[in-house]
Image (cartoon, helix red, strand yellow):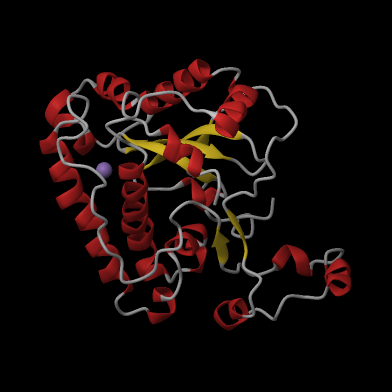
Length: 284
Ligand code: MN
């Protein structure tokens, strides 16, 4: 896949595990990022317009193809079309709605302070960069190498924090904790063997995140479901994967109620996962 391979210096921060036995694809899903094909890409990336197919075929045989400059990637992930100025989304339920699994005080601090902080810092980072203000959050996270170095870390951390938490609130529900149905269930069975096997791998990965980070259920570049983990606020989109749902394992997500017992928090999270929303995240 020609996703982020154009920047050889970029650190591969995504740690992945095998997704289980492969089988024929059920849904023709694209991966999270793809090269922008709009003429607009040439204005920002200094690239010429999309090369006609026959010329491109010639170029691919030469050195030119290997030295092609990075271009903006468009995102193909849920909720990735947000743009500046970013707005802290309201919680889709009351602060205490996820109790006893996730307590109201944690939800309040997590949403009103941490998520608000990421949102404000992202806006501040983009304040003096109008060329970045008209990029979607998905484009920013898919194309970190296109972002000026002085704000790249801020966009990576605060932009990731903004997006990750926005998704996080939606994939939890007081009516959650059931089992996936339909196409999502079929994909889980295909790629992990069973729902229980997938959840076991997910929980293990969440437990193994060293320090702060997330564990995710994603659609990878081969259109297979996979469990991955990321550090800090990094998002799987940056590695060309489409996140369907993720668990925040920063201590701020659980320490008030669970202290150092992250495993108990991970178990509690599984009881509030909104599988209907996760299934909808397949259809972007
Ligand atoms: Mn968090």
